[in-house]
Length: 288
Ligand code: G3P
Ligand code: CA
Image (tube, rainbow, N blue to C red; front, side, top):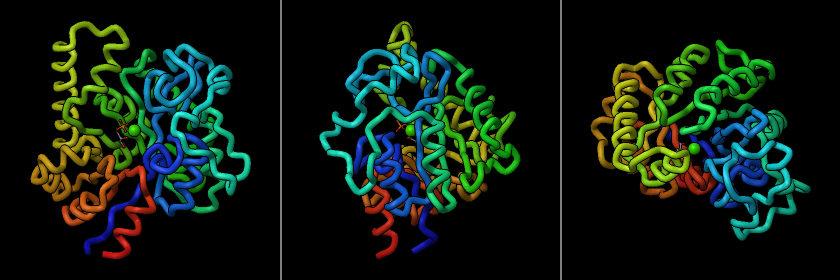
């Protein structure tokens, strides 16, 4: 068995508890994850908040756009009932309050061990690249070191599907912690983008294909130190991904929930992966 990839809990241990909740992140620490992954958006009052979708409908009891509510309003929402799994009593009052990025940092600072934090900047954002500006400004205020990207014992890395996000972040962030996400066109992203008034679906798909191509170029020319292909992409293009690794690009694969996929990626030389089930994937690596 080659060196097993580092394991990042995707939106926390989101297979177990509702994604982006305290419970999910505490479970990730208990599962022995090497790191956690978090999607960030901006609220109406410019606060960084942890949520995947641009809208509230899927993962809260609210509706409409995240960007239309202030953090105080978001905090009124129920973010865990949709999952149908009760919150764990062993973590005390973890509550199902909407998590701000500041809340997540506090939780990780209290982890009692070094931890990695992979932040995904979600686009299209109605705030455009002000999302990147807000994140860097917030981290600087918190005492983040832009040379090492350490915030106390938290190592922060940055991911996005949007190549412009990578280019913007490259001005402030160490190259080896920038991860260009790579995906074939996903209908969900098309839907999200349409939500912001983008015109024709065909035109949008063209734009997304261009973003994919541009993202691959950033990786091929090693303008970023990390590539983040999805597991489907890797199954489709294993030789391409192996070449990236051989050329010195670090690969962080998403979202790897099947043991057979995790073992396949480890054999390929993939160094990092995100999963909804860190304990399952860790156990598979330990027994192989
Ligand atoms: O880790 C990257 C992965 O999270 C990207 O996809 O849709 O789960 O944010 P998504
Ligand atoms: Ca993500």
